[in-house]
Image (cartoon, rainbow, N blue to C red; front, side, top):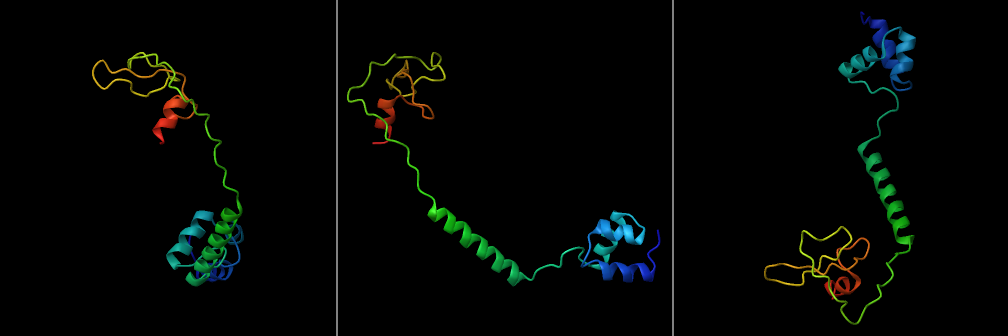
Length: 136
């Protein structure tokens, strides 16, 4: 495919207003040929590029609107956990005996290392009593 002077003139005339696919149909060439030639000529196809100042102004406006939406959203805090006043008896499980829903609070520091093993709070690693102690 040969790019004649007429085709190049037509490409530069159509480029700001049409997509590469639309231009390729009018010129009788492939879309990739239009994209490649426009790239080599330094022509932007489709919508004209905005200036740096316009892009920065649009970004600032977007971020201001985003921050305003964030400020207007109520903060949702989780409900406080019920606090047991007395530690429940631990099951004294080794690390190999722990199941997926067992409390991981260490009971002993010396071997054999044992863990609480009571039912843990969903989303945490500890039972309600040890979860409360962990955040005090």
